[in-house]
Length: 318
Image (cartoon, rainbow, N blue to C red):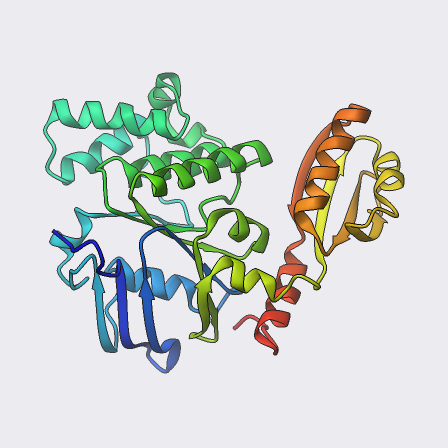
């Protein structure tokens, strides 16, 4: 059993090259229990770090320990780690329940155990038995994200590694899954999550690792990192009914430094230096004016701008 005070993940001088292409370079990293977010634009090394953690690739140089295990020992590691890829790759013709059951059988569970664990995993991620009997080919993007998460959780791992797990989920589902992640962490599960949305990182993380060009630029508690961008505006896209009314109510509020209607007049872009206050204001205005909200999300292009601000330099994707 891993000691209570031992870090969940340890990277010591880890580099990984794909031929002459750099994946990560000279990474020294300690990941403690709780929720850790890997932050960076495409090409920064997030996926390489996750693949190294799960043993899908091996380092060119350096050493890695995950839960006290060398990731090259895949049999020992994968019984204690759950992995959720960013990309879909489902066996043809399988139902959601069959998909999870098959992976549990690979882990060595018998038919009765696999059936019980499948039902429990589906319940945790909010999929009912009707969904379990449907073929995955008929699932929406959000349901596919949930079934991947259920599969990663089903064998009761100690560590979850999740690559962009909130992609494709609507705002309500995102809030539910973020709540689930926090609950799992409180129960003692460690999570490593990649994300390029800093607002989600705020909600999710106990600590963050900032990556650029395959190198770790900074790591630490989210409050310390977030304080560095307190004065840097975050842009939020809102699609809703009556956007002109919402814009008029938001304009001039202390938490909004700029408000612009979308060209199609079906939404607005708000810049704020105080996201928590703005979201409270938005909730109040939605209730007061009975607005129908289609989506609320940070603008991706501004995530890259905030990232450049954080690292003090260019963060173009590689």
